[in-house]
Length: 162
Image (cartoon, rainbow, N blue to C red; front, side):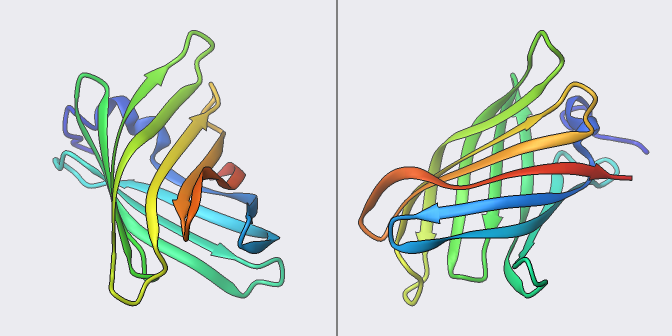
């Protein structure tokens, strides 16, 4: 596949990842879920396509989101995400391969736009840590929403689906 030079450092995350997650927030009851995320490369394009889906333990659909991960040079990333709950996120962050071989994508700056009927989400952060073999990823999602300060909302541990 002919990959854009900006995407090449991230080719090891291309694929589908799934596993279990846990959620909590002061305004809701704690919950468990299954999660599937995928990163897909498009030949010659300077971005990866992203999709995420979650389901309850009994298989009922819970959440989904779509977007694009955009490497912009100098290990910087932009992440554009749309959600059917009425939010869009524009995140900025970085990626870094650590000495132990893990790859960390961290998005610590966000602009969230809420539709008029959506719950109020003020800010988000996201972190993805891929192990050295790129066979698993640990994800964390923090948010400031509905009058609550920034705090962890979701965490998951996913394995690559081959």
